[in-house]
Length: 175
Image (cartoon, rainbow, N blue to C red; front, side, top):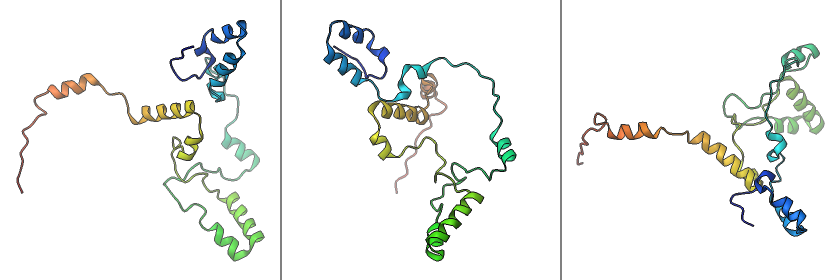
């Protein structure tokens, strides 16, 4: 049994699962299933063609006005801020545990703190990445590489190397 790449979906196995069942090789069948990705988002039913659906739902802002909800909690601050919630411990130490917690809850309802300290939805901490499966790590790495290294136009690059107007003599000055 030869498999070229990392197993993610059952479609990569082609008829190997079927053959192992018909030839009563349970150990090979179990091994093949165990080698598939455990990430639910890799399953075939999540990669079906998508169709446009009419948006009949009302907006979140309209619902907030209708029910009188407080302000929306931001996902991240507008600028990088490590001092989110810095005064919470002083409220507990000054007012006591119960009163301090009530003040913290009231502050959270009136002016919600952001959920994270950075505004980067692509950032995944390393301790979480280390805990992911190999297929998930590869997908995240490929997504980050595509963002960090956009495709280059090789033809334009070689044309710029051959262009004589760009190259100017280099003047060295001894100090």
